[in-house]
Length: 243
Length: 182
Image (cartoon, rainbow over all chains, first blue to last red; front, side):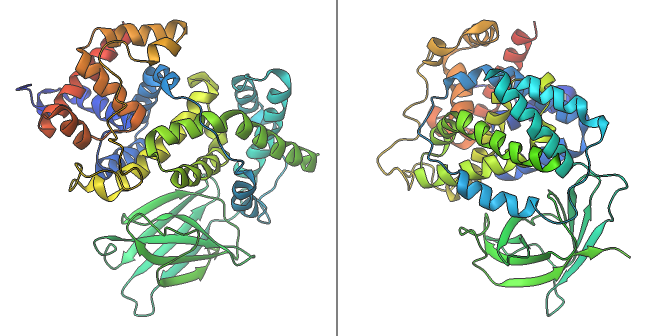
């Protein structure tokens, strides 16, 4: 059982490749896992290593049995389509999207033509909803500051890549055992979690429209166990076009 | 036209759900165990599927593989966020399955049960490459992948120090890569 080798024995290239492999395998503790994911988001070479490992290990997927799945579509659609229906997001499709359409439709070939064409339609719609219409709509932003001004986040949503950057301008990370959680509150007044704010800058993929409210609550580590905030709401602000 | 597309899209999304939910539920059940958490995670997975469908690249793999990657990542994020994952009480039984040893169904040494269901040349190749590894190590890689075992859990399972199990796995992964890319 003794293996005298140390991780440092591996070369730099191998280290990177092993990090990618470990990320795909999933053996890393939470902090390392998060670091690897963030690196894959900004480092194309590392992202390619991750993809290559996903591909290499994918034959193991055959080891998963099917399990009974309840029909959760009503819940999923309720959580999803309110946001999607946000005004100003729909725009005419542009011809440039055909390539993606073909790839996805071709890829989802499990069920023959009917599904492929349904999926083709899906991709047109997804492309329309999630891809930036031209001319690009304005960047949206908001300032979220606590009453005591001891914690301040700025929100900046870029419609071109659909990324919401949450920057902690003032204040400390959430106390040990707790997390800041970001919520989107639409016209229906129902909060939807956008994710946890653990880093000085957190990038989140989402779709926003002017006028929706962003709110930050303090939750148990890992986020609210409920669909809505359970902890105190620390700050909230409507997001609007940057001036 | 757009409205029609939008309507069809919902139909397509449902079709994807109906086709893939049992497999993805299988992935989540194997990794998470707890039924309520599986259902919660399954919702999360399909929300991500909707949000990221534009990122799917058929050139890089099968649609089901892409969906399973999303499901595994969702399950792994949940597993690593569990209090046990902080490295305090791995010996304690899991809250949701008081009598189950989470390691019980680690594949036995030698060709695992997956061998029977794996088909096709890719699958045969990875099985052949697994066969080149020591049985223990092959089982550790498979257990990590299929069940989402952490280094901490693997170290306890094989009664070796954390750094040792990590080196084991890293060496096994390099050998697998070398074999698969051959």
